[in-house]
Image (tube, rainbow, N blue to C red; front, side, top):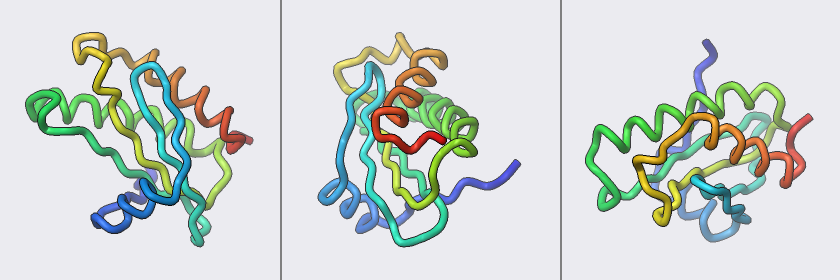
Length: 113
């Protein structure tokens, strides 16, 4: 499997939050910003106040899995930050809903090929 490029530094996340556009789905919120590279970068931010570490990591794994499937169909050169919608209950975590949310948001942005 190809490794996903990620946002690691705090200033990279802040840059996407301040200059990027956001799209709200049922379970996931997406921030998008065009970058200067010829590849996409992914960041996932989930508040520690939301739940314990095991559930946060479960959410991250599912978002990464969906992104990895959809990455080959996207236009390159974007930074994405996914945030879990705090109004949505963690027990309602569903791979299918996350997949449909992200696919719908990517279509709305216009980056799916």
